[in-house]
Length: 616
Image 1 (cartoon, rainbow, N blue to C red):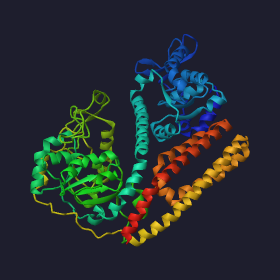
Image 2 (image 1 turned 60 degrees about the vertical axis):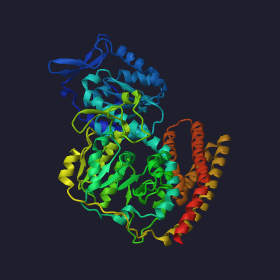
Image 3 (image 1 turned 45 degrees about the vertical axis):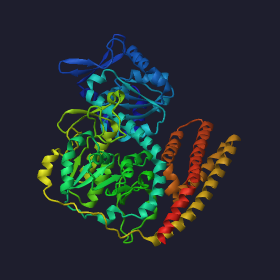
Image 4 (image 1 turned 90 degrees about the vertical axis):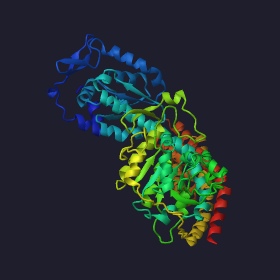
């Protein structure tokens, strides 16, 4: 090879890529030809049957590389990293590294033999080689690493495609682009979810705790009670309109327990059908709108099973009976509650949709089969909800333009969005896990749900729903399982932890003040030693139950981003700039925590009072 340093760097730093090329024998390569271009530089072509496809220009590959770089110059000027799809002989990669000295490079090359020639043909300086942060020659290694790469590179990135590869490797290109799109979309969605709900989850759980203590736990009291009894899970997709009379028949004849999820209750009420149960878990303030009609009409015969981190406004003044299920987002119940019989309390895991949460609930209770109705998870024309959902609007042209294509239950292509698609994928995941359940999808024209075969609801009624099974007040067991003595102990302990949290916070700020003074005096050596003390204080914060149960949960996104920022700044060469940024990040994080401690003060007092009232 022309540059031994290339190989040594690859071998030492990118073992997976090295494994793909280390045994390549140049003499045995028959489908790749290196030849001299008209301009005198080497070019590369693939043999395909009796023809050749050029990866680079056969006239002047360097000039071609310059045009590739020009195409991306505006993006590269703003980017912290470039992700290359295809190397070829690497003229464009070498040019980008020379032109943009701060760019970090990541490479995905689907052909190991091309990767071999890339490292053979190009000569990189030691400084340039250090800017290669990863090299991938197979899908598995790319998938296992790319998520972390994107997470730890907050600056925008540029995807640089080798033009010929778009036609030579269309399947690989689709895999490459979809992998990155999925990671970026999921990360954005995760950050948005955390940012939107991290505080609401905790405040809701605190305010709802009095209802948790004073209502039956729907799962604990009824686990397995409804073994092999059918339930119909009714969602508010547009296809629900077509099934109203079938659902009325099921209700009138008591053929299956009807669980209304989310907004479906409004369609059912509008058609004078009261479900056997409604379920809710959405943490937003907006969620109270879903049950506005129930409250306005003072409907008392629809029991509501609420997730314990649901928007607290939803269950205030609810006229019917209340039952609860503990959600994975409820860290309050996780700390305070113990069963009297010492068994762990079953929880439902958070999910993108109340239908998925309710599917978990029905499994705990033993229902089987579970029949899905109105579970479109897609659009019908310009509609995304059934009639009667008074706060639903028709889809805009922009929403339809940005829609995704998925297959419906008949195999046709229909439109959906990322949110519905994520709900479908999560539901499919749970159905795979709960493989003992029979799940039937009766949603005409809805998205196909893997693991839930489609059948029309009138046929399902004939095949499965032959007898009256519904009993009145079927959830009304209540033995008050939560241990009041342990609750009192938890309250006393948490009050102590709260005082300790305030002391740790003062210690943290004191250290930051000293570090800022050391930085101002340019005493970087002593400043470095202070990080050990600060890290020790952070350990105390993470171990303190008050911080861990309340404050860090309200700031878990910022806690995660702080950790990522520390890792990112580890690569910063300018010591002063690095320390300025670090101290700023540490202070900003604790300022957020301090603000939330103040916000929580009256809510914490109310929580403590409610628990002590229960213990009496």
